[in-house]
Image (cartoon, rainbow, N blue to C red; front, side, top):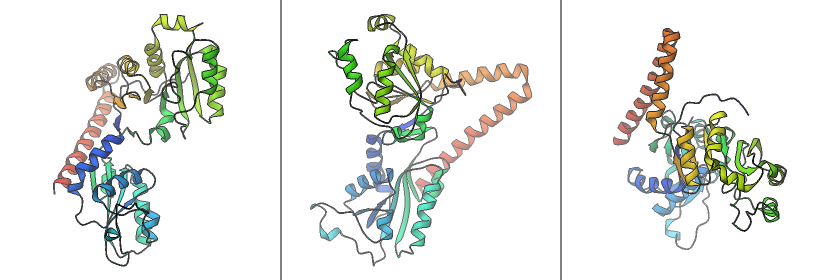
Length: 345
């Protein structure tokens, strides 16, 4: 397995679809009044825009629709009285789920400006980075990196830096009848239906499946187009030996600590909790849909201990590293302060 880049614990910021929904409901009162149209930036922005349009009972479209003067079709409840006349000067909100570097938002703005529309257009994102918020007129929350969202985590570049469980994440867990360590289990390995097919390569598949089932597992992954860097399996002769070891979470945590992964995606709540404790690194639990982060005090203690050790060997280098760390923290706090100040008025 690959050697780690950095063993320091990190906090991973995570927002679920429920979080997004609650954010939009709380955000409505802060947005411009009398909007005529909500425009979603494909693809993730359409999720946020659709929720907002439903709450405000406004027409919805995407960026292409805005530039081409068309809206998405609606059901009977919307009604003709709420349609939009593109020949008038309308108040329009262009919305994305998040803005990080600002590159995509800048591209959207350039495209809309090139269309020379007669409207009053505002740009917004539900979530923004300390840097990205400057590209929008409105945002709901500043979120530091690293971060990931429920609606795109399995199709995000973060997967290349993640350890991912198989059963309960990529496919269902076997039933007690299927999990017989025999012919029924082999049939499960062959015929299990995927729950999700990630569109990005996975860094490390880390599973408690036994090595003797590697060939069947690799064939299933290949057949369903799931790409990965390494497949790490438990090396016991049979199911009874594996259960007797009681080392499921310990095995996963040791792999997680050894490789250069930033996140572990685990199906079981109990195992996720143990992996966090044993590895000191974040775990996304699929069973409860929550991000479990290590204690931040452990992070600062580990960094402080490392800097103290380095100071004995090279005080100048250690002082420079401490200064850089302090500047990063100050910069983040400053952006958060300015963002809150701007939101208040």
